[in-house]
Length: 567
Image (cartoon, rainbow, N blue to C red; front, side, top):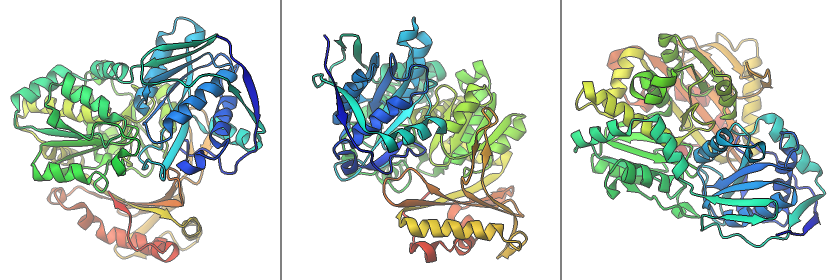
């Protein structure tokens, strides 16, 4: 079947600059005539491989949020018109971000001819942001290694978007993505694939499902609850926990993806996953877990413990080579964390003699290290944890890692709980008390004034050595990073203030919101005193938080008295 191609005149829109996780705006912005089409065309024009879009194979899917089906069909028609060879699209348009990364990599590894090798992928997600007609939408491009596009590619997308005058569109019928089948239009193919199977196969290669099953059989009192938050991971969680691990259906909640996530905010933290938190506490469940809208984040709790993301990645790294088959086979090559993440992971790396890295926020920075075989496990304090099995953070991977660790530890320490594993870790490594204060949808001018104030303050001659309460400033900077693999430099990645006792304050603006600015304030204090290991985090950090607010003048410059979320 041949098809006609039209060249559609258009004008550039301001602000189509992809952030750390693609372009995120309100749905109504994407619904403007030509807005979405412009950005799709810019992505195709910016594909870095030789030949660009012509002959490319792209994996496409998303978290199922409102407006996804319309954009999927736009991608089909614009891709066909630009000479793309094949689109591999998740069933019903559903494809978690980790599953998409795996599919890009798997199809690349098993490709017989170059024409079937995935060039990358287009993901329709605004991650943990709310969905619905009055909420958020997002589009991001992943490159051939399965990871987020590097700055060289996102910069090119932005440059194209600023000068675009037309896009190409093919005359094709609307595709029904609810049926798994292959659609052929001449030399252009659209393959609708099962969204879950390939990902589940990968997880079964990484973890010891039999060991986890035996653990559940021996510990009938060990009840778990997974919250899909009506996001993309619902079908994956149902398959993994109910079908593969033979747990009762009561072990999963909110596992049906909804266009608006049920009117909730699909962000797995103590504030937005309050339904899960309440049930785990009231039912005294041994293990609770949640993932976000697109499946790349996770939260781990129990009725008597909350595992911070910083502690989570450190504990996974500490147990990996003993508890997880994938790492017993491949070893752990190195560890990495985002700069704001606590230094707990560094302590594990030092004790085990591993190379470790501190990188800017954004998963793409881990990808270079993984591709160079210098990093195996990494994490961000923003509930993102992962490894070199793919090139995205992976919520369900982290949850399964914890279950495999629990199963392994229980073989030698029957009855060990999440709380026990935390305390055992602190006894070996000490405890990094850590918290993040999020101030969402802050007036951008106020947020920028605060950052400029901080930059001026840390550059002043008398700042180092100055005392703030019990804390003395040892060093301060605006974090910059030179990638050890490709030599690229990222500057102005967040204000760091480090005190003489090792405590830290980090303040940065997030690029993941769609409206206004999100101010993130991070505070960290280390203790090697066992009497403090069970202390409440907020109480332990209160003096440091007070000084952070004083130094930053956050309330004065932004007008915000209280954070939106505390984690």
